[in-house]
Amino acid sequence: MSYPSVRITIAEESFAARLQNQAAPNACARLLGLLPYRGELIHARWSGEACWSPLKSVWPLEMLLPPEDATSHPAPGEVLLFAGAVSEPELLIAYGPTRFASKAGALAGNPVLKIDDGLDRLAELGRRILRHGVVTLHIEHHG
Image (cartoon, rainbow, N blue to C red):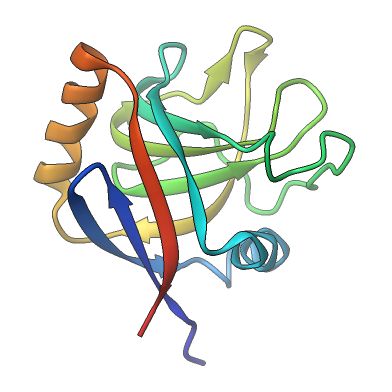
């Protein structure tokens, strides 16, 4: 089965991403319903080498998302969708070693996207966000 491809643009860098529909079909459907998504990407100080995008402007706080193959340790290039009771809804983009957490403690997010190419560029962007702050994030259907 073929799934829609997605383009993730962080600041001026663009990445193709694969939808992780087999691992988290409900979460992927919810993500697709948000597209095109425009937001901010901020370094995730609690989580290690990852950045996050708060979804509170597009996701009702009372709409929880049940776990589907949820993980606290995404690989570089994995994008997690979290909408649980203990923290605000968000997307987490791992660019290096990550242990997904918030001030409330450990979190587990549903894997929704996977970036396979350009992981070196993604890591450099993550380090730049750590040093210089917030950048724009745009996720849209592609092709």
